[in-house]
Image (cartoon, rainbow, N blue to C red; front, side, top):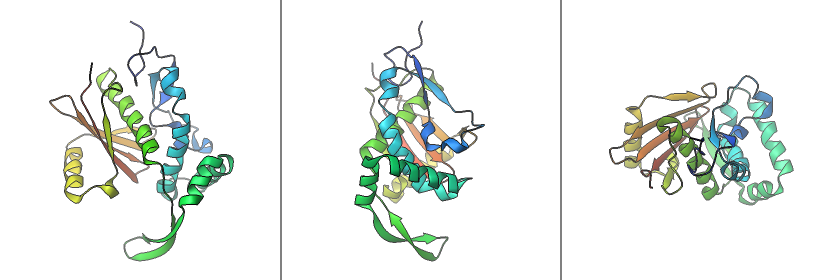
Length: 212
């Protein structure tokens, strides 16, 4: 039986897609990382490149100063802003001067920007579909909806309940432990996901059961 795409589960897999996207790692620090990949068709793989660029910026803005080589991450983000006018215009259009805590009690000047939530959800959903394939050996498919939750926008009780579920699951480490995820499969076939990028940026997801 030919290998089918891990993302759509329909088309023949002729390429490999990086899960999570390789673009979140600047080229200067990719050496030595055994990137995690899943089989993918050209349609699913090629259509994700533009969204991945924005996701790279999102991850970089949220984790850059906590990564092993923050100066390389900053240079990479600056390069993307300089070469991608669409992303640059969006960032400068939403830029706001704010104050943020550094440590527990010190407020310092900072800059806040807005990102396209729909595009971010598409990328994170693709990551979950790829991880589902790795865990189950079959594609979740695009008929099953995935909901994405950012901790900062979750109500406290909902956040605690999701965290409690994740605390009962074993961690899976990828890409030299720069990405970790946990998952819990429910009796009805649905699944709950928690992931963390560079030990800083946490995201949760809920995936419906596969639909035929």
